Structures are given as C-alpha cells and as structure tokens.
Length: 88
Image (cartoon, rainbow, N blue to C red; front, top):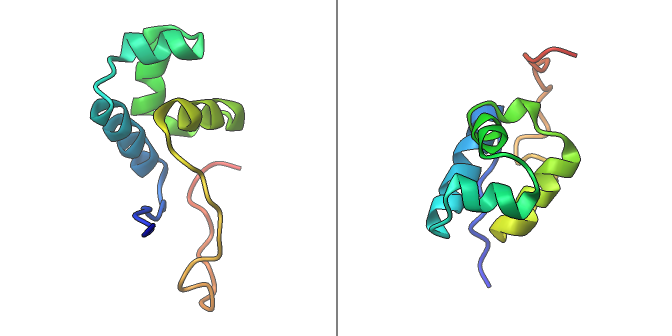
C-alpha cells in the first residue's frame, strides 16, 4: 500500500489535517467530541489551535479519525535545523 502521508511542519497544518480527516468521515464536531469524551467547544478549539493538544489528545484523535502518527527523520535532515519558533 502506497504511503499518502503529509509532512507536518507547523501546528496550523495539524489542525487542517485533523479537520479534513473529520470531514472526510462525515463526522460533526459534536459527534467526534462525544466519542472522545470532550465538549464540542473543546474540539473546535483544538482544530483551530492545535498547539494546545496534549500527546494523549492527539493520539486519541488519530485513533478516532483512522490516522497514524509517524515520526521519522526529515528528508532534508542533513541541513542544520532552524530554532523552533514556538514557546519553550
């Protein structure tokens, strides 16, 4: 089976991927939120601001949306990475 994964560079891309996966499954925010045991408002917030996701929430979302999270070296890993622009 061919890989059709998407590289994830920014948190906003994650929100778009999660939103797209939910819509492709024809799930409303309320339906998915109920499956996850959270409010529809919180799910909406996570789709808009995915940088607030915990690892546990991300894994649960991936499970419910039929997504697989894979971490691997970047194709351009030989270059020196720029500092992450987020807060640490």
